[in-house]
Amino acid sequence: MIYPIGHRINVIKYACVISAVLITQSCGKRIANVSPTDPIPLVEAISGEELYNERCADCHDGPVARAPHKIVFPLLGPEHVLASMNDGIMQAQAAGLTQVQKTRLAEYLGERPIQRNTESKLLFCDEKSDGVKQGMSATEIRSWGMSPENTRSISSDIAGLTKSDVGQLELKWAFAYPNAKQARSQPIVSQGEIFVGSHDGTIYSLDLETGCANWTFNADSEVRHALSLGPWEHEKSEALFFGDNAGNVYAIDRLDGELIWKTRPNDHPDTVITGSPKLYGDKLYVPLSSKEWASAANPAYGCCTFRGGVAALNTFDGATQWISYSTDEPAPTGQVNTENVPLMAPSGAPVWNSPTIDAKRNRLYVGTGENYSSPASDTSDAVLAIDLENGELLWHYQTLEKDAWNMACYVGGPGGNCPSENGPDLDIGASVILANLDDGRDIILAGTKGGSVFALDPDQSGVLLWENKIGSGGLAGGVHWGMTLLNDSLIAAIADTDFGLDPDYQGFPGLYSIDIDDGKVNWHSPAEDHCPEGSRPMCDHGMSAAITSIPGVIFAGSYDGSFMAYDDSTGAILWKFLTNRSFETISGATASGGSIEGDGPVIIDGTVLINSGYSFGTRMQGNVLLAFSADGN
Picture 1 (cartoon, rainbow, N blue to C red):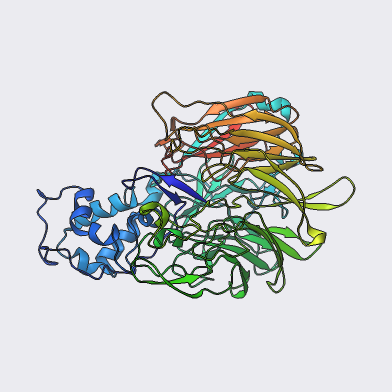
Picture 2 (picture 1 turned 180 degrees about the vertical axis):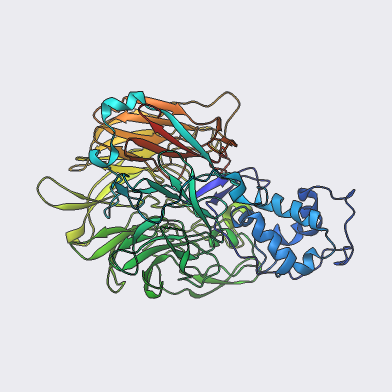
């Protein structure tokens, strides 16, 4: 799913949540009049931006083969940029820079300070447990979708919160993610312990009651999704499973965060793990997405060779059991781009979402994004049904034909690596939901960035049952991540924003309740606008983040930082809290809230958890995890 990013590049272009990219590619040319051994005087280039313009821009802003575009570095992180200059492939290009200059350059490209002793910024719990804490609740939320079917609905027993309690919610504690400009890894909770990832790649074990830290683990790059918790060696041995923005997948011990195994299931260098891996049985099903849409902005890049899909890993050792790709293997098309570089297809159709498990039919379902090159395949912008045991693609339902797009279309318009289709980029980003009708039949529910929600019949190879266009949709419109199933209603959040690109654009952001029997709208609750004057386009009232329901209530957040609880029968707002401000946290550090995007709320044992802060797409950055309870204690 791709969003505009107006503050990094001279013209507003589209940038999705960018993956971490290993800097293993040099520019292949020397900057004119700059010797690799001559230090640059500090008086000439004191800032990271000046250093970048002096030493890097000609490669990383321009058509240099295999040089990563500047826009990929923020999620790579400044630590990796610095390591590349000190010990990696970029040593020659960085020769002559002082360590201070390298650090400034790395922090400029990574868009945050270098990580320095994260643990010193944490408040650790007085006692660490060697097992389950005595007297702690046995309730758990172990995955992104709250269930194998990705309903994102929480029972009253687990929530520990009723509709009548919601109006009494008060802030209980706030946790600051060190070295972070955004917070979008949805927490999971097990027996009073929170597990959550972060912008700098740190995994945290936190106490649900107080927010203090039990332990940390450092992944190679940002972990942007919810972790999955379950057995790995035997039923009494549990692990946390997750991926990062460098395409790695990890299993770590839930008791102390020790690494069990680490693997990279897909060897494409642009691979990123965006959606939460889904644990089922003895396999971990890992969705595969990428940042090749950004690499394609360089006309010297051979576009395109990544293909999305799902990898099944053995939970015991991480060994790959199978990979089911969303497109056929790319092959030369016989055409070249404007730089005479051969073009490849099919490509793309990434899987941004967490797989949905259908145990009855022994299959999983995922939604895909657009193709990266022409000609477009029939599996982009589609729901795929994949056999759980062998990865066979059983059927697919495509919502939009001929959707091929990459960033070259925004760098210079058609030409270069821009596909002839040139969009419209209307992905299925949110996880699909498997629901049961009153008559006993199952249906698959999904939504698109085009603003449509629809239902498919899993027993008839994905035959369309109904469809309803509830939002205007568009490149940054429609359904992004936010859907939940509550009783017989699908609740969908609509983003519908255009970042001010089109003065005539009219969106309809907000929550929609849809009857799952026929697709008709039960009610629509328009999003309230809490943006101060002059704060656009960074502030916007579109609703993109995942949403969560408990009996009688839907919890949802917005780009403007507002966090609301809605009545499930009318859509009326029962409670709201504005997170776009600073918070004093349990460690004594000050944290900032911002846009709520990507991940959704978690409600367990009377506590409501929500992240706030999102630094991409011109949104409002932040680094805070907030906990609310009905009594604030």
